[in-house]
Amino acid sequence: MEREEVLAGAAASDSARRRSLIGGMIGMFVDSVDIYLPAFVLPAALSYFIPTTLPTTVQATLGTLVFTVTLLGRPLGSLFTGHLGDKYGRRAVALVAGIGFTVFTLCIALLPGYASWGYFSVALMIALRLLAGMCLSGGYAGPIPLAIERAKPAQRGWAAGLVSMPAGLALLAITLINLVVQASMPHAEFVTFGWRIPFFVGVALGVVYLIYFARVPELHALAEVRARDQRAPLKEFFAGGHGKTLLEVFLITAGFWLASQPVLSFTPTLLITVLHQPPTAVSQFEFWVQIPGSLMVLLYPVLSQKVGRRTLLRAMGVWFALLSSTVYFLMIHTAQAHAAGPWVWVMGGLAMLLTASPFGVVILYLAERFPVQLRATGVAVPYQFGLILPSLYSFWILWLSHLVPYAYAVLVLIVLGGIGLFIGGMLGQETRDWEMMRAEVMPEAASSRS
Image (cartoon, rainbow, N blue to C red; front, top):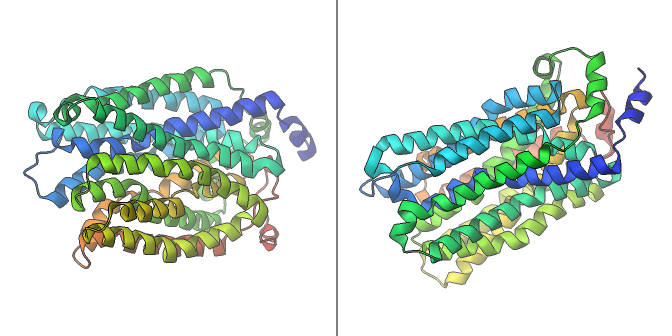
């Protein structure tokens, strides 16, 4: 079959395009809820799983470890979900992964605490989060690439923005649920029972996800290409001469997450445990900052449709290293100086908007960077493996605290992440006008338009 015939057969109907876009949005929302539940909900209930007699820094490290193992599970899972998404289809892997993370989230919601099971309780929480993380990688092998690759070329920025925006809305929803639950019961009751309610909400969302994806059509263009190319996707991905591309996308994803993950996930623990800010005030701050954050997540990929993916990635690296680190420093310094509360929230919110919101550009670039028969693997594996070093941020911060004060150690990670992102952007190619249904690897000449 000629390439033109494949492209013609790959043209998505309006109905399939719409279903895929909504499915990608649902997938991102559910993924983000499940990923960030521990980081946003458990800091106020750590004493249920961890004895308060432990040193403060150890409590903070164990608390973030529950979140960290989820990020570690995603790279392991991506090796399977990416391969399955390219071999059997985006919809199939979306359904299998959805069943897994829904079941594991339900198990977490039913866990007993330290008073009943001792340290085994937090160990089981960590194990379940690892398994849930492996399943959650399926979102980047199925729903998300499917939504982007079915979009019209001139609308891919909007599609990526719309698919990414639910991440901010998910954080907004988690924060709102957390605030309502904390306000509706005494703190002691929240510690023993209330923290479970957001996890039960996560289970309900998983059920909705499964019901919806049972009706999303599969990508037929993939089957047509696979009929001509019988090579195993995972083997072709690693042994097919893509070494330079893998280095480039690893620097981009690892650099982005090394800077943004601590800002997004460590900030609540830092504010409550180390900087002694009131838990309710921190939850309110998280809620309000996600409103502009959701809009910014949408706008960054749209901006990349105007200026180019590679140009924006390089600019992100510069402002991460210089501007994001500066405003985060001001947040910490203001809190330690016991200055007026609003300045703490303004600086912290600005750091989140600058550093965490542009992740849709990274997803869009990965989806465009690989041919159709390797796209699920090309999005899932680099994106998730780029999370490994950043997901260990709690240990890097603990180690760096021997060199700089514990609260300021995160600044080193933000600067290093910006540098890595900038280098990856310099090595990368412009992908804005590349036809996504091609089975060929993007030629080097495509990098000239930057």
